[in-house]
Length: 237
Image: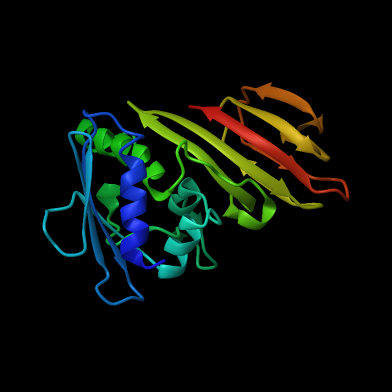
């Protein structure tokens, strides 16, 4: 499948996932392919794709052709592709990357209402990069990337008025530690056994059990067994 076919399939399916009030204008550049500029104009329930510069985008992103194909084949989940993780130099990087990172684009307590509104629309756009309706994510260890120090797959990310809903699948190997900030969260343990460590205390977690916590300090989820610890992490911050 060429890039044109992929973007057109994404656009056709995305129209089923949005309402007429939703709008966004974005540009994506595939930096290892000729004719690499793809613009997406979403307005009044219509999704139009241009393989040239036709509109003024609200933001520009870059990605590789390999990432685009893996998204199309469900080998990478859309939320996973947008997720940031520090590289070996400590620089935050993602598979779909902002072309120009500036300090004012970082989310802080001083982020303007206008920027927050755009962030919310951008999170809704995650579902564009899936040809499936409803959006399908294949959840297995092979489809993960390094997230929060362990292997993970971003499943859902919604942002609205400073409220952020996150669903993530994590697979944690023996002695690996998942690090999470001090937010209320729930986890469902799919397989394996481990411990939650916070405020100097340990709590055992086991497969086929659901746990909810509202910690006052950062949380560490550690796999102390031989079997891979697989969990669903759910947070509404």
